[in-house]
Structure formats: structure tokens, C-alpha cells
Length: 226
Image (cartoon, rainbow, N blue to C red):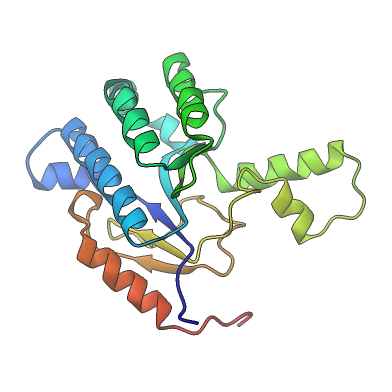
């Protein structure tokens, strides 16, 4: 049977630097990055992937300026209804991975509605990773296990208590923007994930880029250990 990828995770980096390169506002860069995410979601469905995760907003992003945070959340308010209609019509099942409690009221309501309207969809599983920290994910899992008084702690038990308990670990993680780090993303889940750091800003990421990275990943034999 031919090898295929099941789950790709994306670290969508480089929106602000793309804006600077193109002499436009940071907000315009985020808008371009948002449009690219919609495009790549459809590409993942076209390529018959079952799961796609998009690192959209980390807990560390709260340290950015108020103006920038407002711009990011404004995009969700501006395009929220369009996203729900588009993805439910495309039969994508969408979940929010991360801590929704601290999100702005309107954004949290939108996230709840998005999950509710797509919960019975059977196509591509899309994870929007929002207000997320890999370390926090692991700590919260341990706290859950302690609360359950589970004495038989192993890797499987930890995995079952993460935000991603019902999502398979990524086969491939793609980070655009030229940086070579995970930025606190899926630290537990990506122990054996193939990671590609791409020197392309997220708004410039293309179908050819995705195809080539998938082919490169599939050409490698996965080895466990060192």
C-alpha cells in the first residue's frame, strides 16, 4: 500500500515580515495570512488529508501590542460568519485546540458556534490552535490525571488528557517564515513528526511548496529513537 500522510500541522509565521517587505501595514499582512490559511485548508482537503492543524495564536502572543491584538481578533469578527458558512458547506469538521476561556467574548462565542455547526461534518478535520502553549497543555494534562487519582501513569494516559486527545499526532509540521523553532507548539505530539522549516513567508506559501514538502516527507523512512 502506498504511503500517505494523515495529519499536517502548520506554524503560519512571517505575516508581519511579509507586510514590511511589501510596504504595507501589519494588519494587511494578517489579512493576507488569513486568506492563505483558507486556501491551504482547501488544499489539504484536495490532497485527501484527514487532519490539518493551524497554529493561529499562542499564549505568548498576548504580549504583543493592544493594537496588534485588536487587529487579529478583528479579523475573526470580520470573517467569522464567512468561515462558518464556508467550512460547514465544505463538510470540514472544525475544533478549537487551546484555552478558550480567556478569549474575547465575541471570539469565544464564534469559536463555540463554529464547533457546533461543523461537529457532524465528515470531511477534513481542521484544528485551529488558539491561545495554546505546548508546555501548558502538558501541565494541564498532568493536573487532570492527578485529579482523577490515576496511579497508572504512562505516555498513553498523558496523550488521552491533552487538548488533542482525539487527534492523531502530526506526520509533518511545516513552519514558514525562515525561523527554526517550534515556538511552544505541540511539544508532546511532535516527538516523531517530520519538521520542515521553510524560508518563505506564510502569505507566499504555495500549492507547489506544499506538494514538494509532502513528497519529501513521504520519501523518508521513519525511524524511532536516534
